[in-house]
Length: 321
Length: 257
Image (tube, chains in turn yellow, orange):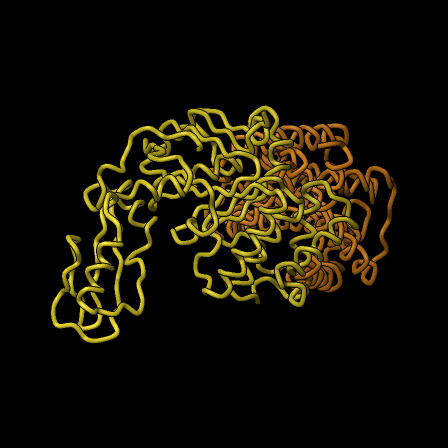
């Protein structure tokens, strides 16, 4: 059995003002995984990442990276980690190329190798043309990519990204997703925190949802989505309708003269809906999910009062499927 | 990390520090050159001849070692305090904190960066002084070792200031209200034998007095204080400050949440 890429046991963090940011977190991330760490603002995601990267001192608990304890074997543990923080934290006056070469030097890479790596990752992230520009001159998206390049320059086995696509336009976000999928396919374990739940659903295989310093769910994305009790679909009709058609016993709402929504419970199917609509000669031209499904689950887990599915909440984390 | 990797990390920090102060040479190397030239013109060429000799040397010859030392002290201190605080303020210090570089290598890297700027400015000022006076070097080893150790000491002091600083105002308070007065009162422009006995005693509590006098001894062969005691003071301060700086880094004072 291989050691996990990341193993966290009973991690606690209490700040000087008495605020408990983490209350006994246990988490394992397997090698090669693409793992999402989700949670509302202030849930403890960044504190957890900060402790893993030694930017935050823990109060209690144990963290191992590829079997190396961050307290007793910190150089070995740190060598395996690449971190992309939320905020830009490079020297804005330095050139992109110099930032990467310097970072490689911190990991003990000789100058020649550092320059080769800097070129490799600046090219991979479409920044090679900007290598001689002071980093402050780069656009927001370029700065994000520069931080990813910097995190990869020592070729870590575990890449941690703290909201890497915040403020990035859709096109760039998609290209970053593809890049991350590629390096994950090449064997790099990735942990991602994001507010874009679509991002987690699209990229990640496993997920932990953290809320108020505790992990409220730790499972696969697929298992999580299966736990949804209902889904809402929106139907668009070819011809105008004046009232909600008969939906074969399924609840629905008329939205406008060409659109209505259908709420399908877990034990219901859409076949009856389509049969009923066919009988009424209502032609459907398109159908889509009303909301991001993961978002619905996320809300139900972190804010049960607002969520649609109290049954989905559970106090204990689950193991990986 | 292996020793080779640690060496690479140290050189990386040092090169980055040197590149930083060379990139902004108009702010780091030019101002001390202009300031010290003005000192030489005013105190050396204009006022100096009216003062006469000081301990057997012309006034300009007497003040030259003190002015060189003053430039080394302020620039070694200024480099570390502004570079480390700037890295802390801009969060680029996190690049180092997440890396496997041991804290003592980080500290030595920043300190040697301060020493490099202190010595670079010291060299510029020394070359400029040759336009105004002849420089004597009576004891080369003492001259070089004192200037190096003083640069190390004030780089460490700058590091302490940078760790505790919470704003850019905080990094100018110590140089303005502590460092400059101590330097001016440390015998740059006069021999403390000119002072009343009481103030001579008070002056002995000023650590900069020992550095300037030890340096002056290396160049002119004269000193107001005991040389062995001067080296003991400088060495003692370096050991204490190095340990304190390392403690600050290890305990993440103001660096890690």
